[in-house]
Length: 116
Length: 116
DNA sequence: TATACTTAGTTACATAAAGTAATTAATTAA
DNA sequence: TTAATTAATTACTTTATGTAACTAAGTATA
Image 1 (cartoon, rainbow over the protein chains, first blue to last red):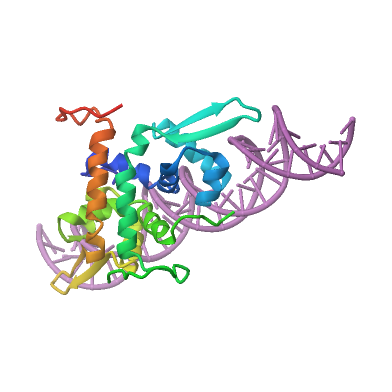
Image 2 (image 1 turned 30 degrees about the horizontal axis):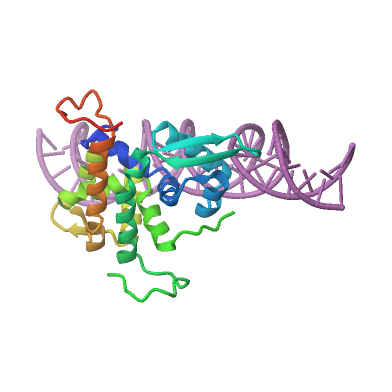
């Protein structure tokens, strides 16, 4: 049991997005190119896993790594066109979460209700 | 390091969709309610993990499990409204995969090109 | 000059998740 | 009776993720 009847391109896309942290990291980078530490504290991922994930995403052509040889050196991660093209997917997920995930008690500013 | 600055509802939605197999199982069920074995062979997941995943999804209110006491008994899984409401997200991912994931050699019917 | 701090990681180790294969209970078909 | 099917479960292995300490290069501080 290993064969699926699904489109391999779709399966690939899903496997990219279901790597833990990948979607959150891309979402975070929609705002602006960012440094390692900024991404790390924004999404709450460990250094080890973020390091792995950024390498994966670079290999997949979703993220670009730029080294600015200032002093001290600045390493900045940004989305490629391919990475940025996931924005609609992430916005849909964001909207869905507002519609269907109940607010937590700390979300006190919410006035609208979720379904279900 | 464990705190993130992201919306907890969005984080929850992402964590649901980044559970391995969850998106593929929902996608598969968009067609029709289905039995365990049909889902299993359509998406190529092991029985153990599918069993876990269906329980998770039931607990999250995405999937409904119906027992038809025919003989032999038929157990059918279907999407709830909440589960079905993920369809636009999955269609976006599907479209993205067509636009950005290169076809495999076995995708010989493709005439269009991907970017990059 | 020595000490501490920051950044962008890496390493070693522990725990959790997923994969594989065999097994089960209920029922049916040969 | 024996074999097959369905919807799982169990035991075991492999992979992924998490945690915490560490590093190298440079900077700031005492």
